[in-house]
Amino acid sequence: MAAPFLYRHIILGRARCIVPLRDALVKARQQAQVSQEGKLTAGWWTKRLDVSIRDAIENDHATFSALAGILLCLGNLEILTFSSLYDNTRRKVLPSEVLDSLTCGDSLKVVHWHTPTLLPTSDAWTALLERHKHLESIKSTVKITRDVRLNSLKTIYYMSGDVANKLVTPFLTQVMLDGGVAGLSRFDLCTFFSDTGAGLSLVEIKCTEYKTGFIDPFATILREITHHCDNLTQINLRFSDWDVLQSNSFLNLPERVVYLGITVECFQISQGATRLLFFYSFPNLVQTNPKLKVIQFLNKNNLQALRKHTHTFDKGVQELAKHVTVKDFGGNTLSISG
Image 1 (cartoon, rainbow, N blue to C red):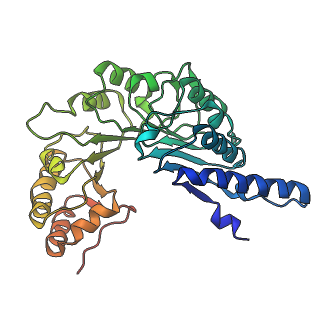
Image 2: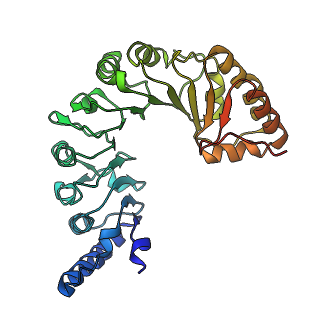
Image 3: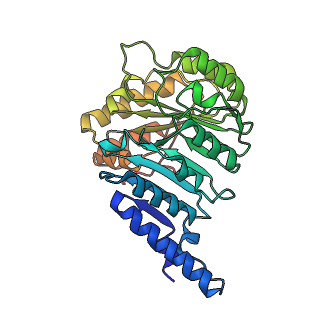
């Protein structure tokens, strides 16, 4: 009775846990086959698997073979992610047998690599995309070796032209420029947005390293967005710290954009910086972009940090709300403490 809850979301945080989990899932499947009572196996309930290794992989063959065995048991998997904080995984290539073992062709919707670790070969990644026609979101830096059509794909994390230009995505609506904009050539951006821009409603830009005084990092990308993305209504900006946000407070957004989402990766903020944000940065941003209707804080931790300065936050939200709707991470209109 506990299987639907225990196995719905599996997080593989340690390499040494992979073999025991494989053994448990295989045993459960074998027992279900013997009983012939139509019993659902533990792996049947799993919707999400996060391979998030934070320790050393001592035995590559045994570990990856076991990981392949786990995937064989997850026939209803919808979300698969890979990440690792351990150095020795950066040099390891994910064997083809791992992705070839996926048995969730009708259910898999999301495949993300959050760190450049345990990456598959180009052939294995291309083959996965070809076999899973219901994918809605992908994130990977691995090159695709041949053209692949994904009619269900709605979101792509774009990092280079090599990754995106071989994808045929007629119903793409969201693009996440997850690697920032500095490494993207104008040619790649022009090619990509000329092919996909008409259908896009949201673009997210990671702008973690740019401040006023440097060459405008947004000039090229915003020019291409303005030229090609006729239906774009929302831009999300991800900043490394509050100073970077404040130094871009005169940013000119495309006129069609009415919705701005904001994430800051550094959560702590002083009272003085909070005051500067609400009474200088946001007013400048709103004045520069008169068609802007909504500003949303997309990260819960950002709001928690701002709310610590209660008086400044409440007064700032009140003033900002005279010009735009201010929303929290859940899409709710922000309320103040009073």
